[in-house]
Each structure stands twice: as C-alpha cells, then as structure tokens.
Image 1: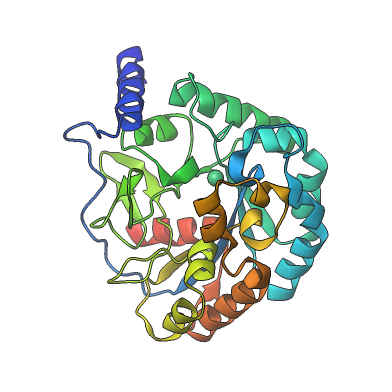
Image 2: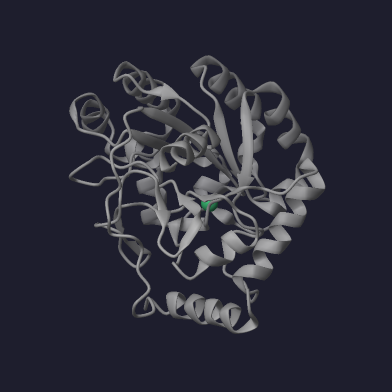
Length: 301
Ligand SMILES: [Zn+2]
C-alpha cells in the first residue's frame, strides 16, 4: 500500500478516537445470501484481563487455565483463539498448552490491545512478528480490540496477508460502534475482494450480541431466547477468560462496570455449557473459524 494510503489510515484512526467516522467510509450494508450450512464457532479473545497494565494485575485468569482446558474439553467443540501479541510473548507456555491439549487454532488480536501512538499497520506488523516468532507462520485471521474496526483498516489487513477479519459486531454500543444495518452472515468487504468479514453473532431482529458477556448479563431470559429466537446461520460466539473466572482484576474494575460484569459471574461456566447445548440442539455444526472461511470461499466460486 502507498504511503499516502497508510497516512489515510492514520487519519481514520484519529477520527475514530474523536468519535467521528470519516465521511463515505461505511461497512457493507448489503446482506449476503443466507448460507445453507449452520456453523457455530466458539472464539476466545486471549488478552490481559480487563487490559490492566499494572503490577499485580497481569493475566490473573491464567490461574484458571486448567479449569478452562477441562471446560472446553467437556464441551467438545473446537476453539478459535484470537491472541494479543504481547500475551503470546509473555506466556508462550500457556499458548502451547492450549495449542496441544485442545482442538484449537490461533489468530491475531492486535499487539498491545490498547490505543497506541503506532499506526494500525505498525501495530499489525508487531503483532505478526510476535505470532510468527511463536508459531513459525503468519496469522491469517484478525480481530480488532473492542470491535472498534474502521473500514480504512480492511485494505491494510488484506495488504498484510490476512484472509479474514472477525471484528464487526452487527449491533450498537454507544461511543464504540453503530452497526445496526451491517450483515449478520459473512461477507466480502466492499473494495477488498480478498478479505472476508466473519461478523460476531447476534440475535436476529434485536441484534443483541450472542456472546458470553451478554448471556451472563441478561441471564435466564437470554438463554431461553437462544432456543426460540431466529439466529444467523453462521454463529460466532465469543468468550473471554474474565467472563468466566473471578480474580482481583475483576475487583479492581470501576463500580458500575464491576457490577455489570459481575452479574452471574459465579455461574458463568454453567451458562456457557447451557448456551452451547442449546445452539447444538438447533442443528449447528461446531466449526473452527477457518472452516467458516473455507466454506464461504467455496460459496463465492
Ligand atoms: Zn480484546
């Protein structure tokens, strides 16, 4: 990509931080054809809990890694992990355990998981380097922190060799994203033909994200809705370790956030088990996110 285009990306990033999306840059609004296959991918964003960069609050949920491995093993579903580059560098042994003890695959979730003075491309290059140093190959999938992806980032992802992105919540979160009319099924990014967006799952109609933090927040009513509500045929269900396990990092959250994130936290594991059961009973086939990517590439042809 030209220097000018890269500068354009930095402009877009600055505008996003100011809460203004650049005029004319929009995510796709065209709903793709509904795929006939019902696929379900459980994804994990692997990062420092609540992103505290303070001594004493470093990846505290890793003390539950045995429990987590047992849980995923019990669920008997493949796990697609979006890992932060710095986490990879700091905890290679945890990554190796997830890699060897479970049916997993890895993709990139930024280098630092925080707004930096770097351009998006520089941040991506650092993340790729950390990934390559550990796995011996480049990542092909990407997820932006906080779902805060900007359309100007898509061409950079394609240019850096990524084949798919899974950052878009087709939903609304005040001050972060407003994607109430973006597609619910995977779609090719407009103007970036080699990049597939695999959006995160939401309930059709109400567009409430179908992820562990929302299931946990709304509890029983949303779990019940899983069985009866129409859902996209491609279902990406995301979890974080901090959605499942209580640590001092949770206790360190500011009051309101702590209360919201603390709701049903102590029964979060059961909520995940029940949600996966209900999704399966609706005929979804557990898949890795690259299975979804391959299936949609095949549909395109
Ligand atoms: Zn994250």
